[in-house]
Length: 110
Length: 115
Image (cartoon, rainbow over all chains, first blue to last red; front, side, top):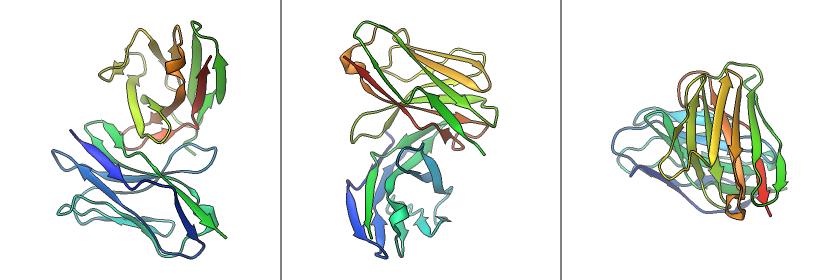
């Protein structure tokens, strides 16, 4: 069935380091793809999305490109900040529902 | 804007009792609300989808008589865990959508512990 797989955490980086969180998906059709972020004590927030192949979603310095050929949607940021510490969820939609990956916890050290 | 609240944030109850969790959209009307369950180091698992004024649609494997969902208004949905058991202990998250399914705004979650 449709699923989302993302790299396990926690991921610990120093401030200003380059970030990549891998995400791959399996789907019977052509879903929209999302990254959600959950800051400590808060609900999930939509970080960025891409609705078709080769689309690039971007927000707050984060980027992810919808790669149909590799069924991937890796999250990247060129220079992370302490305030980026959170849990990141990759997701896809199927019909009217959202299917989430397990989440990757990111720790950024000052 | 687009704030969703959940109450309570944490609840501890005894085995065999029932507990109600509220989900409110504070600044928009939610045509659809979703209830998720999250186990440690696991993804969010959709339990059910509810539309205001109609019966909830439950995902396969979710007992509708155990997890009662009411969506009585466009700003409030409730999840009642009936006859709770320790295995029901989990993190329950709701989301609310004003329209398209990917426009889901999430609550902060409720940690349920059944002793």
